[in-house]
Image 1 (tube, rainbow, N blue to C red):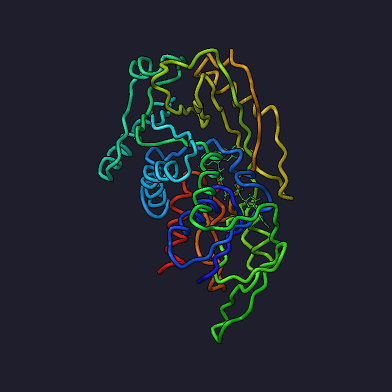
Image 2 (image 1 turned 45 degrees about the vertical axis):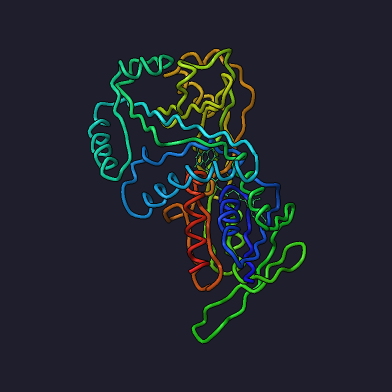
Length: 365
Ligand SMILES: Cc1cc2nc3c(=O)[nH]c(=O)nc-3n(C[C@H](O)[C@H](O)[C@H](O)COP(=O)(O)OP(=O)(O)OC[C@H]3O[C@@H](n4cnc5c(N)ncnc54)[C@H](O)[C@@H]3O)c2cc1C
């Protein structure tokens, strides 16, 4: 049996563990220094912007399309296997448009998506008003409605993936930090192999999957092939209203000016998120004025939110690869058995199922 060790149990590591657990003949161990669904995953809003994203070709679109398709089967599959509840909003995403010129590119995207088998609708202001009467701002010139895009609770999903993978025989060890990795040179081609990792006890490995988010940088540095992942901080709020916004039977995710209003049930909403870059030294500290700005931007197009009670605020750090496109999925250069599944930046929840499938294909030819 090949032993696959996955470092990291955020949404990406958990999705990989579950996907690999469906393959016969693998022994799988997942290690994380924390419990599951902390770090970036614990802060995410879980908005899955696939059809409504502007990516139309190449890897960026393939990954999105693959994930959206997989989500439709993955959620019921996990619920059946684990009995866990996974909040999954299937009412789509509504993106507000504030400038005339947007519509030209949206019409183009609508045609492209049609040819790819996905549906988008362009709504005029009266359609926006009648479907979502909570939206009131004269700057709203229309909206794009994407009925096939989704939102999922990232923590609930990660925990269900862990439970399902465990059910299929995967071993999880939490509270275990991987400190170092030993490698050997295999043959004359000078490719290296990772042979052992050093956590609480040394573990022999046949395949190492680095799904450690921001922790991927020191791990790859230990293998002398550093992959630079920098933090981009995001803050968000959990709000409660006395009653749901607009029509209680139509509660899509609403996005305007890069601010999401995410319904989570019972008149409660997540609102976020800020995008705060690190300084030269790689440090970034949450700024409360920026969170207030996000709230005010949401209130500007959805005025009822001004009356909401703030239940909670939080922040997290998105893992963004420096100088290359997100995400980083593939073999670590110079190593035959080290795979990277990291640097998912703003779309790790969206792209986790497709990442897991890509890693599975690299391990099982
Ligand atoms: C505010 C906010 C909102 C977001 N909203 C969305 C959204 O709407 N949609 C979306 O798709 N994405 C969103 N994201 C992005 C998303 O959260 C990330 O892309 C995703 O969570 C990355 O997952 P991951 O598993 O790679 O990393 P993480 O969740 O960061 O997990 C990495 C894990 O590796 C572990 N680890 C690291 N080093 C080691 C080590 N040496 N040994 C053991 N364990 C280690 C850590 O403890 C951690 O648990 C958002 C992010 C933020 C902050």
